[in-house]
Length: 106
View 1: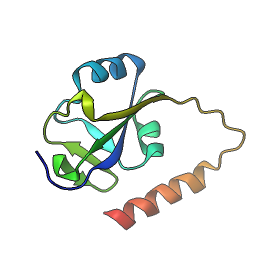
View 2 (view 1 turned 30 degrees about the vertical axis):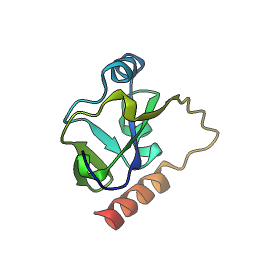
View 3 (view 1 turned 45 degrees about the horizontal axis):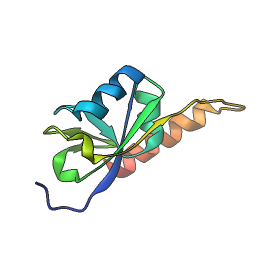
View 4 (view 1 turned 180 degrees about the vertical axis):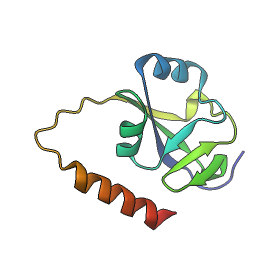
């Protein structure tokens, strides 16, 4: 088991997949994001799983990590359903921030 301190990571998914992950855990090859916003934007659903694992569990690349091995359901901290209700959105600025954040961590 990895000895590095635990870090919170996020995984965005659908309701059906979230239920499966809560029962069975994460499979090797699953991606988790360092930031909640990234998991929500790229996860393909409105369900977010928060998981506490060491970065030794996966391969880091820019803003996300690909899990090298399965992670048991006991590592799941929380399961959220997030509904986005936007009153104003500056997508051009959002993309600029995302790109600059990727450059800072990559």
